[in-house]
Length: 279
Image 1 (cartoon, one colour):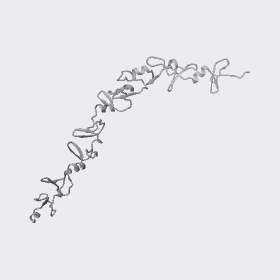
Image 2: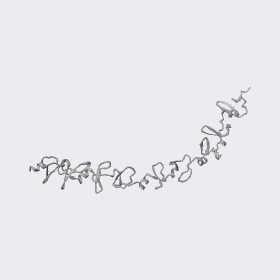
Image 3: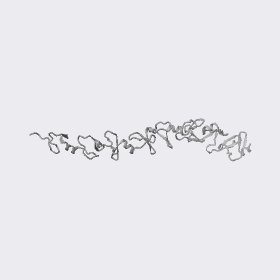
Image 4: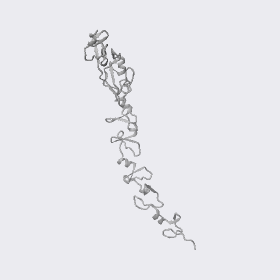
């Protein structure tokens, strides 16, 4: 008697019939399909062993069931998108869900590079500087009403210019006599020390640090020969064409302070009342 060759599931003989081997066991075609075939997510029927099967994520489809939910076009060899578990061809998805570029009024296709700003969308190549018309891309930009500028063009067009170097001030700076300056450009006219955040004064509308101004223009004290600046609330005494620091205004003979007291000039000297009486 010949050995039996039966379907592992229904036990019917497979002699003279098509069968499929799975895990070292033979199955007749109907049993194989019922045991191992996936169910089509669209029509809910089994996807037979001889049918072309397509799958997306954990869902399986007959080839003829894998179609756009909106236009019914086959997606077997087309790009597609899933929206709320519905399959859509790119055209239908774009018409229904994609944004339009505000510059060219064309759809921004899924997966393409785009830029979104203030609720509007642009193709990356359509988002350009209003001045130089070059794509801004991922670089910084500055909006001005409905126009957008790359930083160099905005500074060239709108930013104030430094009084000294004439270049644009992009941030910060110093205002002196209602004119803008870069901090690094606002320097002492004499020694070129930066004056931003420092005490300074001016002469003929030119700024000077206190040290240079004192050295160049301040009058000298008759007693100590040091400059009399008057800065920081310093007080001084002036008589005829001579000046003294308040602390230096003393009797030339006895050194008593003459501030607020009577005094007598005696040549280059100044004397208190007592010393003058003793002469």
